[in-house]
Length: 329
Image (cartoon, rainbow, N blue to C red; front, side, top):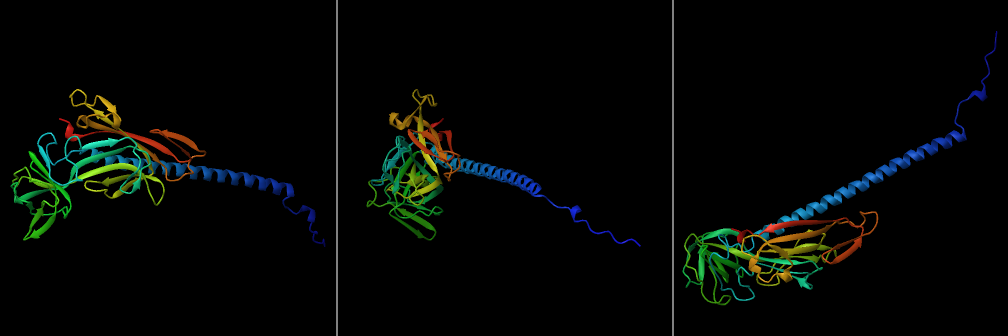
């Protein structure tokens, strides 16, 4: 009877140190490739997200500004040249006329409504806003008040309002707003107004708020970053409303009709506009940056509207041209 064979330790399987080192090297190469791919995908995603936010901010900013610029000089119907405008509200309420409906400044310094300007251009628009609330009483000029049957826009004392019938328009400051049996009375006494209204208004006339919007780029005091602001400065310094963050600069040119053919013959900076009644369009350029400062692989310099910045933010310039509706046929 044969005995069982003895185990052969020389035939046991395993990995040599060389094979182990080769396997580890291959693993490290694969791990490095996966890591590099992940970093590249993450970087591409951040770039795409930053560009998407830039474009979204720019679209929102352009839409807001275009809405007000298109409506510069809006008085409910017709335009500022089709009727008689009478401003009886005391200063500092400016006169409403074609020369004041839109105005601009080239890169002013200082502050607006407590916000420090950062060097971009500014544009100021005067226009009626809100609902068209029709009159129901006290419509002759000698009355120191007018009456309406509803108040959807919450008119209040000290508001600057205008009443219009498309032939005549009176701008006044409300000194008191009272409600009696469903009739709202808007008083405009001589304490805040000068003289009488010029228009005799019927039930076809209506009341709106008058706004004087100033668009500018200022420094957000909380983030220390530039933003697009709008302030309603109809009667005071106003309150600045931040509209879009990371708008770094704004350049505005004005389309001037030099031969009365209802077309912009040339575009000028604000300082070169001598007759603001001839401005019929606005060319707007916005410089919008990414929120983060580590998007680009290296710092890059960008010059816009005479100002140069250098960092790793992503930037894009957006341009649009806006026609002023109330100055076109």
